[in-house]
Length: 253
Length: 324
Image 1 (spheres, each protein chain N blue to C red):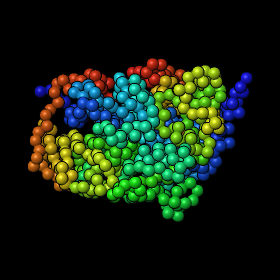
Image 2 (tube, each protein chain N blue to C red):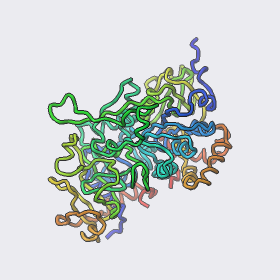
Image 3 (cartoon, chains in turn purple, blue):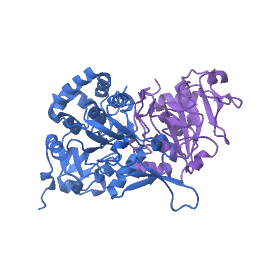
Image 4 (cartoon, one colour):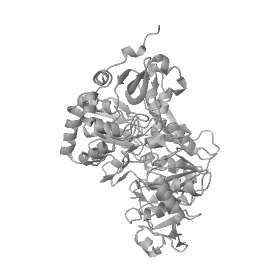
């Protein structure tokens, strides 16, 4: 069996969730890899775009920020933030956004703002950027997280980006017409959300990881009764990722 | 012949800042994280020791961090402070927030962009559904005592019922922004004052149109007849612009599409010194105070680094640049 890293597993697992023709709102890092893996392997008609206004760039080199000049090259359109967020929320398209965060709760709400008191935090992160907008407006959100107890928390220190809010029908009642997180992809496992309660449950563990390992690293109760084992990346997927997408290993290392 | 309208507007960074920006002003920063930051103007503001600025931006990086670190900023409305992988959270921004050195209020990128758009159209607010039930909506950052004074709206935002819906349907209203000054960096300005931005415009155009005064730095000045040969490429008409500063590489160390990439070696240098007060002060001395104009700044950066980040004419970035 081919060796692979947790990051490669994350990128390929998330990439497999993309349907051909999806419009992908990408950030940088692992989400770039996931989007391009999908596009190069099974979803050639998917389109990657960035909140900064770069629509469907060539991506010959990996951008390291959403304002990297590499997101402006070989695009069908270079525009700005207002246009980009209009595409994201356009009801005509299935738009899938990739997000990461410092904290997540059982309903997939995210914190990327701060820890402690908002006005005088003990840790400060960059803030929402477009994350709250993507979580509010996209048809679906795939979340990347490091699986640690301090990140999977009972209560967020700050709710930056709306997931399923307090579960059940609360997202809809809040005024959102669509969207919500579809999966959480971590370095250990893939979680999904119950169709009724909207609570996170363990869907798949990576080869070598047990449901108990996941429970040990999750700060709230999580249903593991539905879990199965995830398929390891294939040689083909790994080779595309390593040779075509990130040959300089800018993200993979 | 037509007079070249730019003659009255063409000036040095020093003159532009002293004429159009004053202590306590609300200042909007163009660019986005690692691209087209108006660095020359940011350094000039620091040199003129302007204080108590109220910065408004969406996602910002290097210019914001420098201004905060130099103590020029008292208030900040922001969606994101980060400089790509070189500072996933802007270092002096993080420090100022955690140490209580600035007053700040968080919005999202779309929310900030819509606020500029509202300002540019002369509207009091813009509506969105982005952010319902989040702490962006629930938590105000600025003190109640400052609400309704200067440029701080009497509330951060409001939530109303959609007046066109039959059933319960909430929307957020975001107050318009009309900054005193916007500073933006463009690739080209015509001798007539027309501005041409290549690549992504981010929210620069909304920001510029919403502001009372606009200062533009640019890589090149193009003849009026040339910039008007292809007006579809142009971004802003001349009458929005108050000052034009011709200063190549003035977004360095951030990128300027088709001209140069971001400078990984400088951004790494900054990352290494910004976390410590003493080394940061040294950086300011060396890279801001001791290099009073763009020519001396570029001399300090050096030909080697400037050549390394020079953009490929077709791609718009430096192909194969070592960005690790």
